[in-house]
Length: 79
Image (cartoon, rainbow, N blue to C red; front, side, top):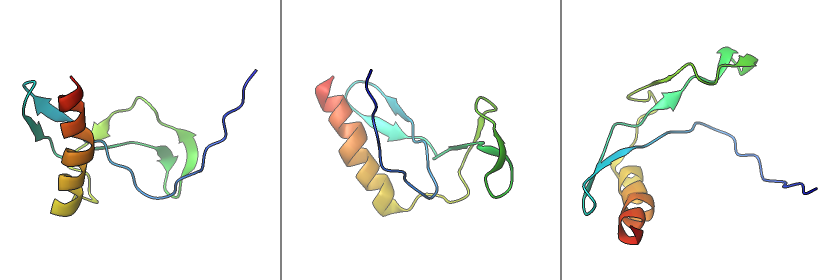
């Protein structure tokens, strides 16, 4: 068997989806999913309960441009 060890990342996370026509993409507002039942990451994981948007932490123009350039545009170029 194989074990994969990854670095743990701390902090907020965002999900960013886009509407694409095969050549162009328009980002939707960033979303976050529900994590733990209680504040402070206490309680069971609530996976599958859904997400909310726009995410309260928001997304500034610099981050939006970086996501568009490094993720979305590269995916469109590879399609």
